[in-house]
Length: 266
Image (cartoon, rainbow, N blue to C red; front, side, top):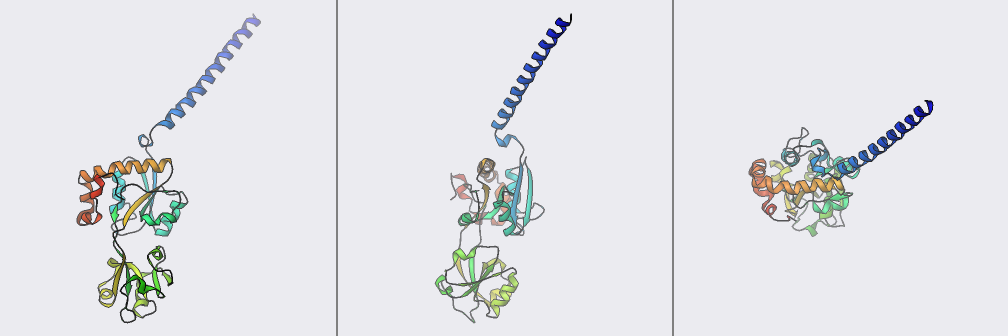
């Protein structure tokens, strides 16, 4: 009797071990198949970093560029970190941000493991050199040589300037314009829309570069490639539906989205 019980117990244990082994294989198969699913079938957590640009990237997730991103990824959980451009780039380079908003193509060397999509999100305002005609006469970029040139510390405007300059980086634009008015700096590099009426009356400008495409960029990894793929699929749809025109309003024509109907905007 005892022998029969022992044999029966052994059979049950063997069956149990086989069942556990089979469950292990089934679980591994399930995990494998799940990993093969396209990422876009699974809601993603997407971290977006950007500088604070009024009307374009607001801290509450509003603004043209952030609302565009929300329209591209409507079913995902989006977390926006809107502060300074230096912080936005740092988060991206430290792999703490999946999307960085508002970079030029020639910013590529400052970014780690970066993937640019086919389509841009805007054409940025011209970058200009602002000078005081009481102290300088600047008509070309070459005239900036050997001058003291100031620009906002978070931007890499030096790439648009001659090498032989003395650079002065500022944190506050009004301070820079005050120095320019007094002749304590020769040139301020910035954008025309940041000049007030008084400054427009005092200073003169030359254009350093214009028609620069502005991008959102992704990490060059599996998730980044999927995000970029979804972006490139969504943009033509958002254009043809009229969403982009409604979102950008009076500035829609400035963004030059004509190429979105073709294969590449670059």
